[in-house]
Length: 169
Image 1 (cartoon, rainbow, N blue to C red):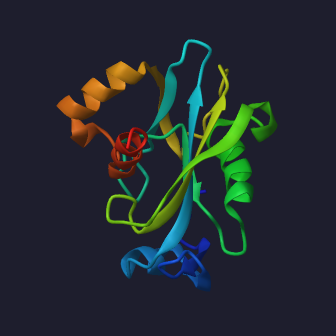
Image 2: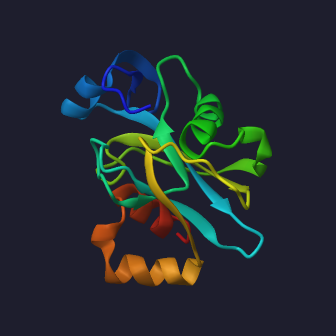
């Protein structure tokens, strides 16, 4: 969903809910909030990335995680992940094999003040992406992605770069 009227929980610096507000207010005031990201892998070990729709309010047209989205007010991280998968790439969350949390990232400038749970799963497609969310889907070899991020960081969302670098720390 790309609406500006969505409501998200506001959290403190320990990721505890302290209130809620509309998306537009949370982003304008740079309030701490929550998000989920998913890296889908195919049997060959490639990672699926999505190019964000040009209509997105944050980092339009940039490559990001296979699926990414905000945690809505009153929602938990796992609920958000299961909601975002069919919304963005058009497959049921249950069709993603081995869906699991991989790593937790604290809110920072690179994540746009979002606490992020990164998930991983396996799915080879086919996908039916929502054109209002996703401009394109493409598979990348991990080594290819390392090189592209190094050569053309402006093509990737700041959050994806942060998560990708954090996977080896």
